[in-house]
Amino acid sequence: MAAAQIQKIVIVGGGTAGWMTAAALATLLDRAGLDIRLIESEEIGTVGVGEATIPHIRSFNQRLGLDENAFMARTQATFKLGIEFRDWARLGDSYIHPFGAYGRSMDRVGFHHHWLRLRRAGAAADLQDYSLPIVAARMGRFQRPETDPRSLLSTFSYAFQFDAGLYAAFLREHAEARGVVRREGKVVEVDLHPENGHIRAVVLDRGERIEGDVFIDCSGFRGLLIEGALKAGYEDWTQWLPCDRAVAVPCDTVEPSTPYTRATALEAGWSWRIPLQHRVGNGYVYSSAFLSDDAAVERVMGRLEGPARAEPRLLRFTTGRRRRQWMRNCVAIGLSSGFLEPLESTSIHLIQAAITNLVELFPDAALDLADADEFNRIMDLEYDRIRDFLVLHYNATERDDTPFWNHCRTMAVPDSLREKVALFKERGVVSRYRDGLFLEPSWLAVYFGQRIEPDAYDPLSDRVPSDALAEAAEALRSAIRKEAATMSSHDAFIRACCAAGATS
Ligand SMILES: Cc1cc2nc3c(=O)[nH]c(=O)nc-3n(C[C@H](O)[C@H](O)[C@H](O)COP(=O)(O)OP(=O)(O)OC[C@H]3O[C@@H](n4cnc5c(N)ncnc54)[C@H](O)[C@@H]3O)c2cc1C
Image (cartoon, rainbow, N blue to C red; front, side, top):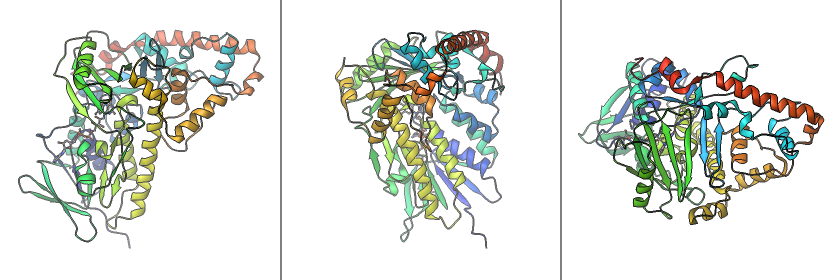
């Protein structure tokens, strides 16, 4: 006999996480009798930042059946080919972590090994010149990738920079059209079953009681259900990622919009610059142990390229993750599940990953613990691996100009990262993860960008005659420049296909 199905899902929170979850569950678990309710409080509001994404969001939107141009117009979105890191390893440095690989492998040897060999012979250009998305980003160019794998214009991917509040509103329409019911109100009480500790219902400030079989905690940093009611516990990662505050302020757009996000290392953290169609998002992520809030506000205001469009907004956070993200009949998604600072634009991706795993492991009414264990195992790995990647940016620096950078350069790092870096230094090899978000091209971008130098390259590179190798690399470099120059300007591309107000 088939097990009884979950009938009632209650989502607490209507930020990006809440509406992404509601829209996805209503679309992907589409079945008769499923009742999805979402509770949000306008009075409490949302965290209100979160603008840069990574390419995976495109598959999320596609699974929901969202039209990309309509989505972009509604969310004031621009395209993103990568992230520029300024001043990270040394003051004056700049590199882009692109959404695409460097060069092309030859003779089954990764391009970066050939590049290392050429560089030793004094015959290599900057590694960045062998990446189409980097060259296009620096030229301010964009087009969607070609599908023919022989074309250089197929060698990249892209993501978006958008207004996350508008994205939530867009998804709300999608979710409500598929039957999700929104309740306005503040959850003031959580009713737990006296025997098994499962959540039976939440009670709103006006006395309404909402019962459910499964509760999704999208209540933001406060983790109202997962922590407030269930006490899942939190693993604090401040010893590796010391920033614990941010000040955010949008400003007017005064320049053509860049198809990339910028992260500039400052004295006690880093600042972001994210161009949207109608404004530029700015912020300073910093460590309160090394900088006062007033100094951070002054610094970010002094860096604005146009007039501020709002008062600066201060946010506090503790980097880390919930010890259990799925506990009993409650699943935490979004900021309630943990927080990794936005250096590599991964928070919205973590929401997406949690939703995908929840849909795959969606329980029946018996609520099998194995589903929860598997979900937690996968999400823990996602978090751990992104953490290591972020720590690399801070630790692999030569900067010694402020106490903050001295701390980052000399701090202990997780063993998993230490071992990975050691292997790269020894042989230029990126150890592979079976799961996890960032793949070899991303690690290479940051290793080289942060000036980590391997002692050796793959000796198989020596099978390619040096003249032929130098010629092939130079041909590739010049073809990349030529192809990038054929692309449209980023702003012109947006105007032609997805300008805000142009599509509904
Ligand atoms: C400084 C900073 C920069 C960021 N930049 C990026 C970025 O560039 N890219 C990226 O991917 N992510 C970024 N993020 C993360 C991103 O903002 C969040 O992941 C995303 O907005 C999801 O937030 P959320 O929905 O979990 O929480 P919130 O936006 O906080 O939403 C919480 C919801 O819960 C509701 N709620 C809370 N308590 C109650 C209650 N008692 N009763 C009823 N409702 C309640 C609130 O009303 C709200 O609707 C950034 C975060 C920070 C702090």
